[in-house]
Amino acid sequence: MMTYTQLLHRDLKKIVESTDKLIEVSDVNYDPHKVERLSRETGFAILTIVPDSSWATLNDEGRRRQRKVLEQWNRWLEKARLLFTEDTGKSRQDLEKAAENITKWLDRSEADFSIPKSLTDAPSVFRKHVQPIFDLLAPFMSDGPLVVIPDTNVILRNQELPSWTEVLGTDEFIVLLVPGVLSELDEHKINHRVSAVQKKARTFSNRIKGWRNQGSLADGVRVQGKVYVRVSAREPNFQRTLSWLDPQVTDDRIIASALEWQRSNPNNAVQLLSGDSIMLAKADEAGVPTGDVPDRQQELAP
Image 1 (cartoon, helix red, strand yellow):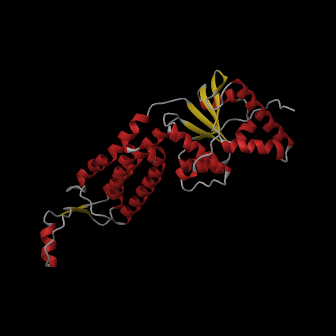
Image 2 (cartoon, rainbow, N blue to C red):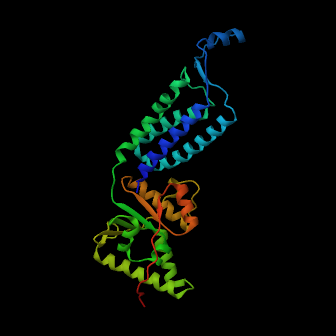
Image 3 (tube, rainbow, N blue to C red):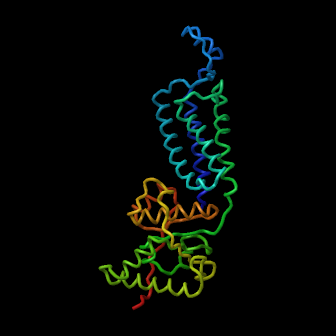
């Protein structure tokens, strides 16, 4: 399971690969006498310094590849900004400086002094633009314990947290209960039309009370072995998450909580557990790793 930072690192490498494919169908116009030529053609002295190299017009295939890599890059940048917020100071500034250079290189709508004289030099020049971002990601590449964030239905289907080891592939993980899930559990135990669901919600709520008696759920309470449970009572900040997430939608609240946890704990691998296809599709779009756990029969509290 990769951490959020490792996913960013992987996807940035994919952007480099897509840019190489764009360069394959590109060409460079190099004119070392551009200023003199423009002065002759216009009859005016050109005093502004202009780059000697420019990109040639792309053909249809080139424009298709350009659109693809720009879409990849814009999605990636929105996710990276969740990690390097304004609070990170110079790191955010370095990200934005590198992002400006990369966007200019990919968009090709502005004069760019970094365009090489020869197309053969283009891949190495682009990598120089990208390297500062790889350097920013490097300190966060180490692994911490796996954090799993279940949606409400996963909890209702299987409340035996240690049994999740079978599908998670590790016996060391933290189950993080986020506000969207806690509020749904409270709603289900009182108002759900199916009595069996009410009982399951009450059973798990009672387990939460039991864990709270053992210690601080904000810091983490051991369930069994290396399996811990934590509770996050803070609602996600929708001013600092992906723009398309809706605070009025519970699934989006859960995904926003996962993103916020990833941002605050970049060394932890975070996995969202759900069997809901819409939730899983949204999580994939947000760059949050997903999984599920099998149903499990259990004794229900009265």
